[in-house]
Image: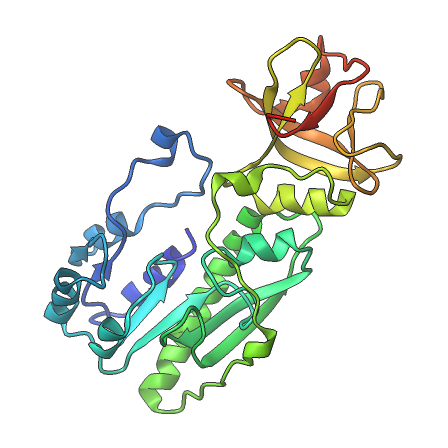
Length: 309
């Protein structure tokens, strides 16, 4: 999703694109049972424009390098590609590679910058266009544009807003490179923070964090890998719950404790409580907490937490 607006603008300029490198075909989000955001698909867009498509498992192999060399590109634009480029690949292109990255570098270098920015409670983020060098997201920055993160925005919401901004910014930098006016600014490595690739375990809610931090985690993990927890009830198998939406509420309770509040699912954290607004029990559709609680009145001792506690 993030890369598609940039690709679309590149294709709007006749003769600018000579080919597309994208990841090998994977099972679709529906087939995987995933909640990842999916767009039209880079491969589909390229095929509609009769553009050659290359899908090496690893572009850094001799085979991947040969594919790239066969195109003889002057410059390569990268967006959400998902592979770290080795020096041999970078050196194979006369004017190098520029990357469209969804953070205000040097903050949040890595594969999941939007998610980790929200997770850590950031209220601003943005897009950086930088020259790829050895190292993860360490090259000189040509341009940046910042936006505010709304208090209720999820990672998916922010990605959708940043994608067209990144596309326009990338085209502006390309024009500057073509005109010989582009000026890169070195990053201050002392200010760098990391944004590593997400995995499913990152979605497991840590109820010992504060109420605002738990809400940030829920927003950060939406739409993938999704924030989740388990409802522990006496004598029953723990019920897995995906938490889609929550807000900070009033009260106090120990982490994971479900408060006996009527028609609401209020849960204690390390500091304060949250009210779960929308959730999804295992094998069921997304629903409001009020609908979920019909017939499931919490009992004394019920709590949320990891599967094994």
